[in-house]
Picture 1 (spheres, each protein chain N blue to C red):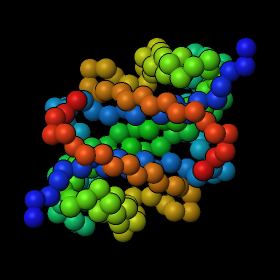
Picture 2: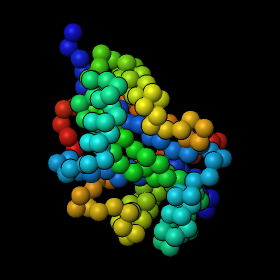
Picture 3: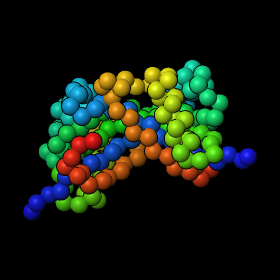
Length: 92
Length: 92
């Protein structure tokens, strides 16, 4: 069976209500030096996987499993966001 | 004029063709311990801004300006991705 190449994004970010010192620092010492329109800044980690899979659901499940098994995040303080798109083969 | 609250995501990641030692390390020592289906892993920075603006275009422009003026990335080696969505007021 020929598998398809997917781009799967994994975003790891503090849960709402959990303090985010990095985001607070960027907000205070970087963003607010430039504009007054930003109410909040949150900082997180971004990982992009190019993954061969039979379906977008399977690609998403694989990344979720890697994130949990390999402890890429701490479920007590972090939430994860996973987004899947088909890779067009071209890079941008 | 009443402004709308937007969520603007700023993703900072190595350009294609620029080496990404962090992504390579995660690929080799974390991902490949778990699965053989992932062809490549790229690592980047994720920032989320909650911003008051008159339009999504203006919100996007503001974040682009902050990123450039405040040197949140190095345009020689990084590319940025900016995504805007309306904030629903609720957090998730």
